[in-house]
Amino acid sequence: MDYMTLTVVTIGVAAVVVLGFFLISYMSNLVKNAYQIKVEMRNDMEANFRKIEDELTKKSKWMRAELGEDVSKMKSSVETENDRRLTSIETRLRETVAQLDELVRGERQEIRQSVESIQRRLGTIEQDITNLKDEAARRAAIARSRKPEDLQSPTPRTPAKPAAPAARPAAAAPAAAPGAPAPQPAPAAAAPAPAAEAPPAVKPGTAQRIELIEFDD
Image (cartoon, rainbow, N blue to C red):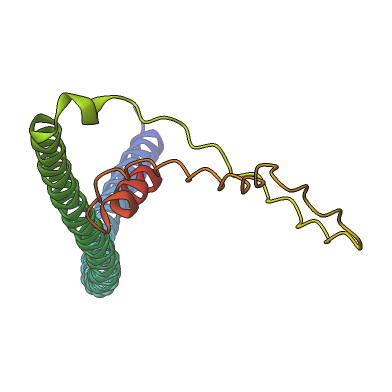
């Protein structure tokens, strides 16, 4: 090999070595940059994740606070509404119970008055029955004390006929002949028949009480 060829080969090898060194340096720089970029991206992502997490935490806290307030408001409103409804229902129930109590008291008063009226009527009926029994016993005693002739039915009384008008005296009555019998006077009117015996007197008020009892029935 001559000197030129060796020189060219040496220069070429040196150029290749230098180019390889530059390539290796460039690749190492690229790898380093890529790693740095990766680290920076990871740091940025972690920072962003932290920010997002902080924001989410803040938002979740805010939402929890808002939800707590809303829940407390809803709870208070529901409790108020329930209290109002319970108060209204209790008032209605009390009014209904008062009306029912008043109705029951009125019915009891009416029943008591009806029972008292029935008791008074029963007392009146018992008194009338006692009076009737006494009257029947008295009539039976009177009937037993009478004679058999008195128990016969009395003869019906005939109304008396009106008396005939007196005749006017004759203007010129002929004188009676001597030796003739004297005229007989007119017979007197018959005595009126005895009045029928009146029935035994009844106690005053008994018939009226009987009529009142029948009217009440």
